[in-house]
Length: 404
Image (cartoon, rainbow, N blue to C red; front, side):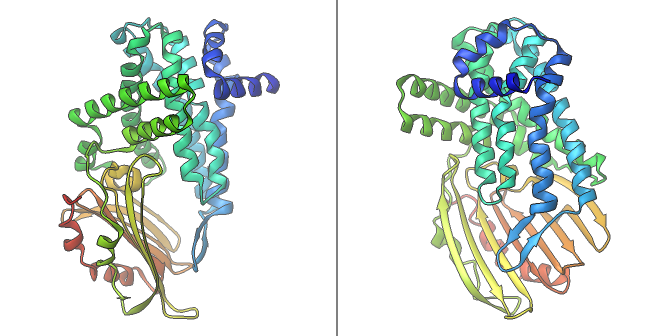
């Protein structure tokens, strides 16, 4: 394996893609060589970093400590996820090849695999962000956005499509790839025994025809703005266009602003399950191109007693799947002294997770396909978390689903 050549290609495609794509087109290659010399190595970055993040670094919860997934479970999930990523690259190549003639291009599966692999570079390199719990999500979003731009630049030279059709081509590939990714996530769950099933309502929110067309149009417009900003050298315009790409990818197609933080405060009680509130914060931001408001509160009895975290998220303009992946599936997974499950009850989607060894758990619910309310903490049993969640004014929150 020539690592010098590998690093040169990574550097070239990330820093000077306009010059790198023509070289990629002319390079002799085979499917086996692309996998052996590039895809296998780059796809391993998020897999390995994800394993380290899940099992060794863990997720830190303020005042509660750090939770980690067991080595065995994390390793199983990593291996299956890695295998599906490798299959996903080829699936994306099939999509690109299948759509080529629709957008005036030439169907060539080898070139389609090249563009699928090299455009994914940014997302794979962003996998290092999983080692940084506080900013990993933002790094992943940035990587996804830049990969979409790389795809846009790569389709004309590789698939011979007219430049004026590259935006529509890119948008269509991205939308179909999102749906394929959801399906593969479900497959991963079924393999690991989590028994995932797509929720009909969630499926419609992600992939109905009107939603797909809106995403495609938004991606075309955002890609055009990014291209113009790149040519002009306007950094601010580039950042704005990148946010627009992320909004088109993660958004739900609705022009609804998240509620002002003070609107959420009324649903955060002074006491939760009899425990006094000791801290509170509420924010609204649009850093990733989509607007989200969040209210957070911490409840504690003092010492080593019970403690609770309340989190209310208003994902007004965001596809609910982006903030609550479990919202579009049903799953049931058990292990020694713990379990995790997602299910529907009383017309609402819920998610539970319990770690009996540490007496820690969480329960969350989606309200009106817009709000996610989550209660987590250290308590004696899951019934206490359920009681805490049910004591909140969930109907009042859900009633705000059409408010701006």
